[in-house]
Length: 257
Image 1 (cartoon, one colour):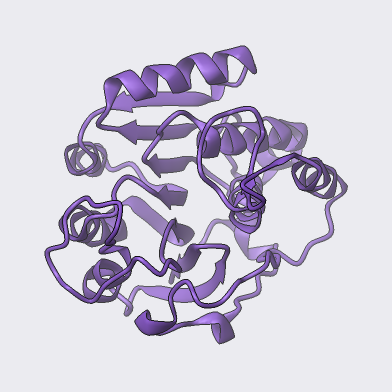
Image 2 (tube, rainbow, N blue to C red):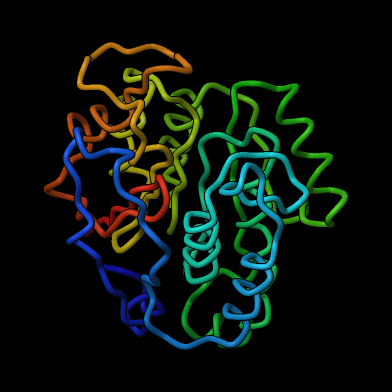
């Protein structure tokens, strides 16, 4: 069963945004809220993101390096803000998405008293995993400058090894952002581990699902020209457990039943 706090907030799916592989990257998907509740703090935070400058006319520039379209940046912030428990991220890079989640968690602290009544952890945190230790150290510095590192547990490890360790510790998360690889096999491996890592009612957001570089060729490795993200999700994510909830920017959202 989803956490009580999740049950008290109405959510909305956007199933009409489902696409075929040959449509990936051909359609632009704007931000639309998943949680229907009006929230002044979230609106204010979103307004600041919408006012941020853009790189190449489409990528949000918050001052932390990374590659996120505005709709998916807004979605990451919303999901982290509303998540009743902790957040898991595969793919820290230099900390852009991590910083958005950490900011949302900081904003959530305003609801601590209500959260305690609803069984929400007093100090929710993000666990972020990246195999590149040097790049992740840059993320640590970037978040430290913003005083956001206190909300983050940085793990320098292969995503599968980290996932197995978290499962062994029986850790579960309310929201998971997957952006560690464009290759088919690493994505398949994580998709198969998500049922154990995501709590009932929790959300998973996959980056680069709606990208024209996706191919139906299996076994695609890391490449700047060819992605295996879409195919891996179609092949390995258990759709008897996860429901499609929409696409925002390049990212596809699923929710665990």
